[in-house]
Length: 392
Ligand SMILES: *Cc1c(COP(=O)(O)O)cnc(C)c1O
Image 1 (cartoon, rainbow, N blue to C red):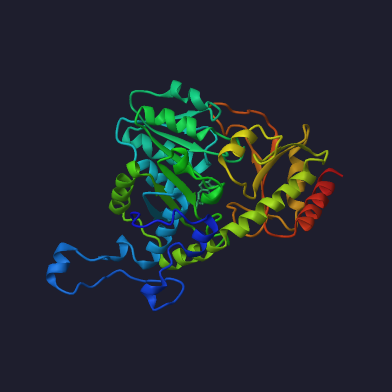
Image 2 (image 1 turned 60 degrees about the vertical axis):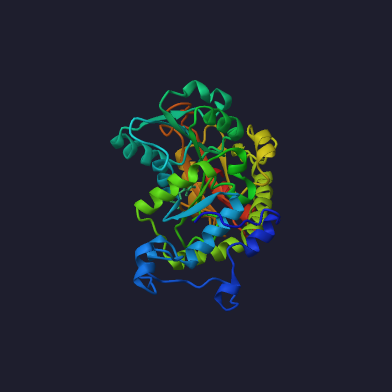
């Protein structure tokens, strides 16, 4: 939906508590109803033929989807917002709304893997030229521009490797050639990074992660700046994207506690990493909120917090058998994809062959951790016993 009113004067925790709520419209009930609907009735032929009423057909939105879209608009400071079936669907739609045949799109080398899969398999069919760039280019991104560059995609910190990008500098350069800037902002959520204020045109959330927050729903959100809104609205409608009301309701429920959850994720993560960094089995930590992280200065300037997703590199010489034994020995940390729920997770990361531009083409063993809402002392105990088991 398009932004019709905004609570710009409210602080973010207040926005989280009230955004999208309109009890006066629903007999005073605090939460919006879960509207299961396809058909919407019109009072007369005149209204039906002109379509002159708020809701016209289930696919085009209902009070439940409006509530979440309105909340996203307010959180992101957007001109408009749309929901998607998944984070990847949000990324695909944002790209499709911004490119046409013959265009050139720039994507950072450390983008989320399935983003690359979409770009590599779908865009070339429409004769869109996909180019990956070194995420550390920043101002030098302009050297990659071509006359047909129409999109610069950014993601910070980068997936699996956590490099930061200078978003305002990249956005300014991109706007200089009238290109659209798309950011995957899932790591920080709209609470800890405000892409549109940094110059981004389309801000993506895999709502599946922190907005939903309970590992039980797939959902994406796209927030648009004024210049990107119309194209997004158009393609979203044309492609028939619709998110089921029960899922939207769960996302709204998750959203209300986003701030308190993220605050705890960050506190727990700092505590766990402080301990992990002292272990001899660990060579380096990957988390921009740490002063030792190469992206720390940019993070401090542009972000107001850090989430629970982080990584570490095992010490040189770590064998595959040792790394695997570590994962298998974990008891509290689950082995699985996705993240952003209340629970801690771990996955093995091998960078070899994953990057095509600035590849750290080493055979090093890395780990990605999601630090959940468990007591950090228990998480440390679990990591400790797993390291002891694997390396002992
Ligand atoms: C998980 C993830 C996505 C995709 O979200 P889905 O809802 O799983 O499709 C996109 N970007 C990042 C950074 C992610 O971690």
